Length: 141
Image (cartoon, rainbow, N blue to C red):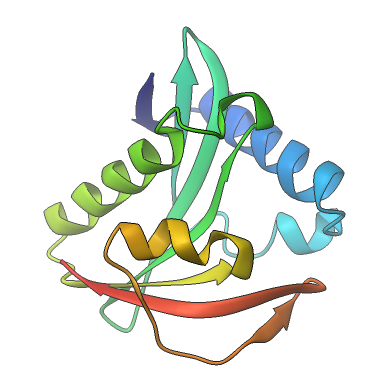
């Protein structure tokens, strides 16, 4: 499996396809909330397994802090395959290259343990986003 930074329209559509499958179809997030006004300013990443898009994520910089967003992996590649870790590693390396030393993300509570294992610390209480419980987490690179 390989993570690629989106550099063309086809790769961007691949990222959107995975996100729509996971967030819109599986988790019932409204499409207009999933694909939002920040798409153009974000760097997008796609995880490919033999040319098939199986994971995605995006990254933005807000006031000098890197914001990791929309991390998702298709069900077929979720458990014990390291797909999520590959996406996160690619985004963290990208952030380092951009001189970003602090990352922040809003994790769905069921994924809090995953991000903790990657060195993220919970810094907020529980809040709802798109009807799904979340917490904010941060990490120093």
